[in-house]
Amino acid sequence: MDDYKLLIDLHKGGHRQGPGGDAETELALNLTMIDREAPLKVADIGCGTGASTILLARLLNARITAVDFLQDFLDVLVQRAESAGVANKISSLARSMDDLPFADEELDIIWSEGAIYNIGFEKGVADWRRFLKSGGLLVASEITWLTDSRPAELQKHWDREYPEINVASAKIRVLEKHGFSPVGYFVLPEHCWLEEYYRPIQAKFEDFLNRNGNTEEALEIVTAEQKEIDLYERYKAHISYGMYIAKKTV
Image 1 (cartoon, rainbow, N blue to C red):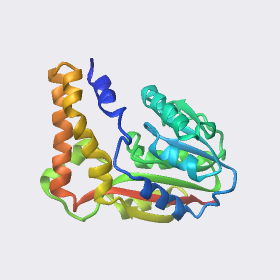
Image 2: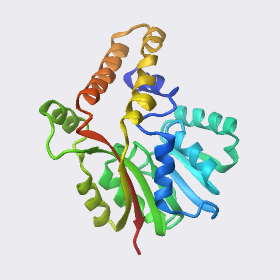
Image 3: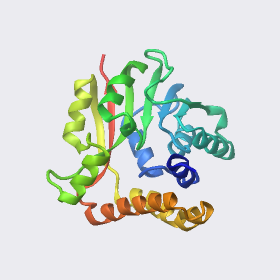
């Protein structure tokens, strides 16, 4: 099994594939000040196994397109949506986030938790804007520095993993540059990392290794995941995800 399939195997059973939480998803929705009873068209881009998708379907009168390039994740999402009684509100789409089929000004909301980094924050903001109606909303969580300077070990790691990482003010400038007006921003708290994401992953390490024959490749993935967890726990004062809520200007 190659590394890509091993990563899918480790993460597809998770409630989330990145830091987040239901309360934080609803807080972001509250900050949009959207009319929850209005008929809406929403795209959840990089939806993973659907934690935010399913919650949005419960809270909104919306047709939601759940977009992820991994069919394995979408299969789990569909099952969970059926169990939650919201499958009629959700359609799944296996598609890359840089090759989306939406028409210009088709969507009321674009939602993307912990995923926009896959094409880069600025590219996502710039490319997706045309799909939103005038006054439409973009809600995206993005890895963000919380301090102006960081320990060298942490800086080196994230410069390698995601060179576009920056402070919130720089991300807001990107939004403004590309025709968005900021509506709200908040930092995901520690529990969104530990209880919602990292601890569930750690609990799966042993079964994951056994299931995959304790191969060197599987062990390397666990080692890399644990290294990231250790870095967060040591330096969490310096880094989190920021939740950005912005409105498309005319």
